[in-house]
Image (cartoon, rainbow, N blue to C red):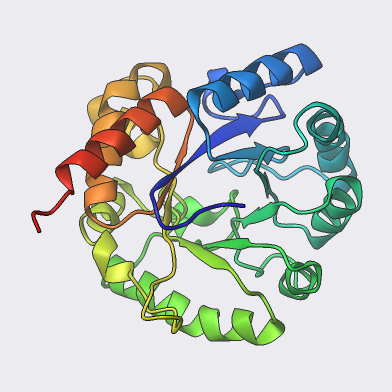
Length: 276
């Protein structure tokens, strides 16, 4: 059972060759097992499995292709790591259904917040799964031409204020929001979101709490292009931005580097201790 009362670290494993960061790609059983076990050892709270790349400019694969890449990893998890917490990065309800039939409960990580598959929200609700809803515009092929906002933070907030009641009306019990760093946002807009992250704290209506915010900024172009480096050289800057994200209100860090993220969570908890 995931404890959402403390900051969480979600490790990223990509099951295709299309990820922008080569070290996250696990296309063989040996690579997957090694990476999964490493992330568990380093303290990952959740491990996110993705078989369909959604990076900017990427053309989507078919649902059958996505399933064929995902299925061996789920088989390995079911056999060797049944008590681990996983999320599945997909925008297809069919993949959610197939995965649930295969391994049971998991978290759904949907970059489209149900917009790309109209069956998604109902499926997640029926299966009683936690759901991550991300803000974006367009598709991975078109989104970088759709970066027009008057106020990017305010527009994302309004998007979720509209989305959340609709999602809850379908019966979804646990919803996490993701502002979608890099998805139809340019570099400046990404940093505006980081700075204004606390403005995306939306009251959940339960015990005065807020919806958890997931931040996915690990080694992304807002870092490596801004610094004119490669994703492979972006760990130090990623770690610094992760700390700032936690300070500004992030609840879950979606990362390539679990050990460093867990260290920064520990530091954040230390500097956040308030005197009684």
